[in-house]
Image (cartoon, rainbow over all chains, first blue to last red; front, side, top):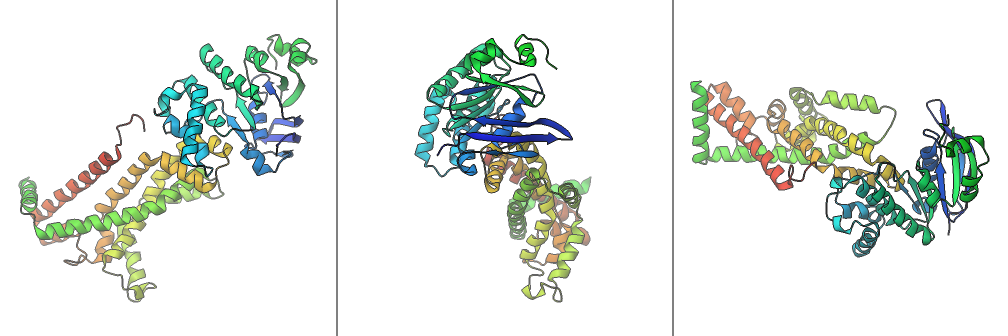
Length: 236
Length: 234
């Protein structure tokens, strides 16, 4: 059973007396790539984390079409600074699967398959800590993909990567998109947003200022803040 | 200075002649302390890990008390354990006083706070690294515990070895609860105290050097077996 549509109703995340996001409403359908953009501190990361269920909501609720535990189990999250476990690359990738009574041979074949896709086959038996920045992010992406999630969150996955690593990660993402995986991703990089987006959520001051199909957003944004942001102005 | 050299010579003599008393008390020292370290680790490692990752109301207070208990005076622990296990005490019926078992119990009480506190500090950083991932993957508490203990195992080895160091050299508690009975509860430290009391400084020093050598040997052996310091940063 699919978790879509996901409905967020009046969700607010409040920390230390300040509203990080919300109250905001959002509905997400089961197809495509939604790119979340907005100025620094707008609440992109908090929104993604809230939708994934790892940020405690101060108000409001998020409902999935499928039962909550099932929906959460069908999601994966790639963090901006990848969480690298003190294990080998293979053990890192196998970790999420090892939590789910899966046979060793099946885990191993899935890890091999994903490692091939993200280009880390050569490093499988190395300790993950020696990987470069790009390789670490590929590892985190690969580890998320081993779960074959219905919905994949990515929080600025290419934030500190060079062009080549960025392209390699986008190639992997494009492959996943072509296979129908639902992706919600935040980015800082407008070029990347234009390359990948099918829908755009423009976040400003913890609110969704604009939600539109990508071509419409990039050619004719309807709010001043979004137009200013696209022009490269400083948006406060 | 003369007595130090005599002590060294005595240590060598005891080792070369493979003195049967020495072998016996050394083995008993090892048996009591190793048992205590295993039991204390089984309690303190999960306890420390839980303190590192759970946020609860009295967490800071608990950690402060734990840290204070690291300096628990062994003599007082020995006294309390003695009272509890003495004939008229609440656990007197077990008849454990003046046995190696009660010595293990006393040592466990002394080193649990030490191991738990070091574990908590070592795993706090690991938990802050792993937190997001483990929550994102919907791990259960036992799974988180297992992951932290496994991935932090090298630091935890140090915690257990610190416990071993404190227990093997401890004399106040096991003297009181064990009674330093020849062929029964005498261990290296209580033997040293006895020989010193008798004025046999060379013998006491000899045993002392053997105790130090034993502690070093155990540390080296554990580190070698577990390949610490061989794989870069972890």
